[in-house]
Length: 326
Image (tube, rainbow, N blue to C red; front, side, top):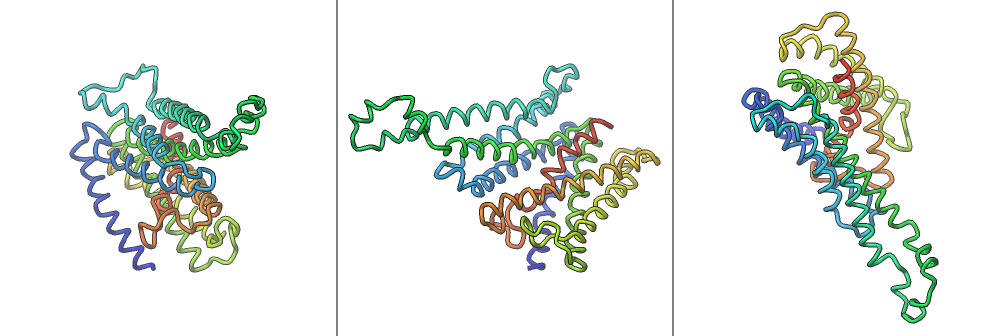
């Protein structure tokens, strides 16, 4: 299993690192031009997996509303890229800031989901329509028929669909916002450092858990995770964050981190490490409730796309707050 995971990880990382390099060097005039389409793909795939995990709540509802909704939210977060493509800078005094576009798109997506459920309720939600005695149905009190309704089915479905769009659309949009932070150099630093910190945390969590793990961290949500693994995760996250300040920052931006900045990097690593673990457990909650071990099975040994990016999804907004506040 470990060999399969390493082989598949290498097959994924090789083209990904190539795209990262080209995005940084070739399309530096439009940061994210090559990477952002990958974020769109990841968002759409993640939405499909969330839809599958929420099958108890969503019933027979198709996946396309949440896939399109999540894709639309991620697409909106790339709106400032359009100014680059037209040879202009995004206006500093624009009434909608970069983070405002995905929020607007999310609001529209939620309204559309409401509309779809209302349309579905009009066709399927009235139990009286299934009665054989149509005459008695027509004479029934409309208020009573309305109160019978779907008995929570539509509320559960709408809640699940909204969760899917937020989880698979809004949270990944922060990766796009990080890539677009300030300029080409600092944006790449913000994005790559997030990925390095979370994945080093995941790696050391796995290593510490396998070699020293004895005390369960959350036996109900994720029986394989241990307190020792959590300690390893935090060590990996903080150490890799400081390493980003030492080596990655000067390599990408040409500026060296002083003592105060290294403390900032350590704080970033701590926050990202904590929320990365929470994100991992959050996905475990979805999988356990759905009765599944992995979010999907298309990547042997790694699971689905959610199993790969779960920690990044929760850490992304936290990292974005750190960067815009710095």
